Amino acid sequence: MKGIGKGLVSLMVLMGALWFGTNNVHAQDESIQDSAFTFFNGAARMADSTAPDQYSARMANDNTGWNIQYMNWDFSHLKPGTLYDVYVKVKVKHAASNPSGDAFKIGVYDITDQNFTISEQTITASETEDNVWTDVKIGMFKPNASVNWLSFYVSGTANLTQISDIYVDAFIFIEHETYTIEDNLFFKFNDAAAVVDPMAVDNSAIRMNLHASKAGEIELGNFDGRYVRLSGL
Ligand SMILES: [Ca+2]
Image: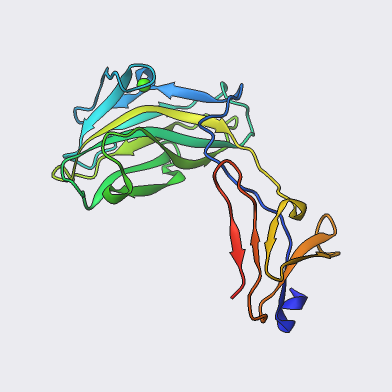
């Protein structure tokens, strides 16, 4: 951007902020419950008074299999071509007070094409809480007219002495929403100031002087307990 050479930075705001949508109610949101899961290596569905629907799937974390899967090819129950955020509601049991190593892995695999639809990610033990249900984001998914078989999976990590059990309540699809937060809603600190900026979509931006004695700061308010702050150097 042109102003950077003069120690100035213009911030154009095209901010797609993403929230965990667990409290949102949306007609196209959907939970796939454990009754629709496929199990391997001894994983099983069982009564669970801590799960919202009183059932969850459990696996012992003594192997690295993709032991809990939701496999399907027909996603016509979702809006075709619409982006969804996909979460899995997971709970783990700590076998040590400060467990180490990996807790579990998640991903989406295209069984037909034999490649990942959503790359696998590993959740480490230190990121987890003992016996607390958590919605973990797997990634974004756009259902289409494909007839490929997909597997939404949770795998073990063979880390029994640290994380002994992995529970899955549901895979959750929430229609993706993008937020644009324009600069008129920002909180400005030090020398950060509103300027006319023809490069910005709305012709307006916030500028801060990086060479000032106190560098500027811009904060995107406090939305639902979350905020983003940009600081000068
Ligand atoms: Ca359940």
